Amino acid sequence: MKTGIGKKVLLFLCLGLTLCLFGCEEQGEKQPANKQEYITFTMYSEEEISQTVLERIEQKLGVHLEMYYPEEGGKKSVEKMIAIGEIPDLIYTKTEGSQLVEAGILIDLRSLLKEYGQNIMTLYQYGRADMSYNPGDLRVLFMPVPEGFTQGLDTDACVYLQYDMMLEYDYGIPNSLDELGDLLRHYIKTKRELKEEAVIGLSFLCDEDTWLEGLSMTAGRIADGIEEQGQWLVDESSGYEVTYKHTTKEEKQFFQWLNQMYLEGILDRDFATQTGDDYLEKIKKGKVVCLLGSSVYMQRGEAYLVEKEKFSNTYLTTAIKMNQSQKWNKLSEGRKRGQGLGITTSCKNPEKAVELINALFGSEGEKLLEEKKETAAWQRLKEYKKGIANEFPFAQEGEEVKEKKFYARDIQQCDYELDEWTKKLDEISRAGLIQCMICGEGQFEGKWNTLQENLLKAGVKRAEIMMMKKYQDFMKE
Image (cartoon, rainbow, N blue to C red; front, side):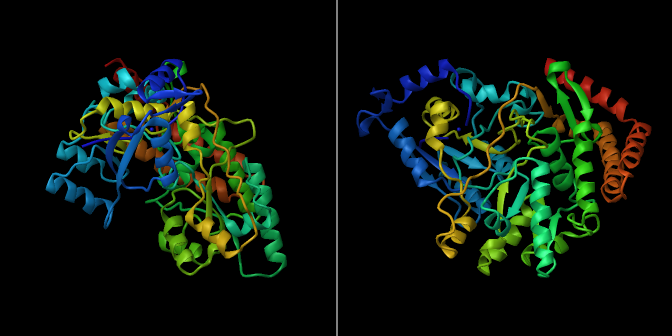
């Protein structure tokens, strides 16, 4: 059958390759000379790809993607294609990677990426260990795709701002925690002065089962500037030095900000004790202005709000920096294991498929994918409140930085002793961080120091050394 997809970074070698690969030049633009020169790939994707993007890929790169989407959920569709043997050239998945691997229908991309995927490889240059399917299987079975290729929710963003607030303040998106705090203060003060129904400024989940994907992940993304999940921060520039994330000065600043929000009555008083059901109910009632953490409950609540046509209570998904000078570390993009674009054994021209994705990660590919990323809820809100806004200034992405930092979650999970040790440190951290967030005026410093002392007693420094050695050994293999 056939193939297609990709993301960032321009290399001159790749640009020359792309010009050569995808067709003729016409006044500096690549244009296929005629329809016969088009390459066609069949592709299954769990997320919809904009028709505009598909048309641009065909016009500019000479690649036609014949798309297939889930019929009744991704799992059934994947099971069906495997069962009847109708395997497309390309498969993009975020949920069924393990099933595709077990079926043996994905090809190993290592040699193809080395030969044709310079832009893609650049994304991985500081996190080579994360390219493999898992630490015990060194095959590379999935490629990342660039942001804007699919229309799914950006899973790396972790801040959700209610459109009602954004509308009232002329869609100004905060770029730092201080700006977010000022926005929430002013909005909540206005609501309370009007004696409207109780409004919660900020909330998130922090129970034992969800805090790692909620509060802990959010702290890493905002404070450490790293998008993936994990508890061990690796710095390649210092010989793979490893730091347990909840000991950094950046995270201290983040939790001190949350403590201030709590003292001012903006942070949900019940954040530490609420269940998932409690949290969801608040979202469905439109009571929470800003959410942090995983998108799971936000999406479930938003589905209900859209059904009830309460569009202004739905959320803008974005990312926020600690401060204006901070730059996000983008090195982790596309490295979620078992997720991404796989090339199947049905593909007759896997080289061209890799080249396509590689081209999309270049500067020209980035322009090709440029499109307003408006959620369906926002589009319906604009229809609902006609004339309010013609455009929405979505938040800027973080700039690339040369800090060679990333999380080493998989190394931890493949070592029983280290994994158990991490769980103990996380247990101490959750309890200590809650105390840091809810403590009284002037007490934060003491609570933070107590947390750090408890982590030291639990052997956090020894665990960091152990983790560093294991990562160094892994990288030598």
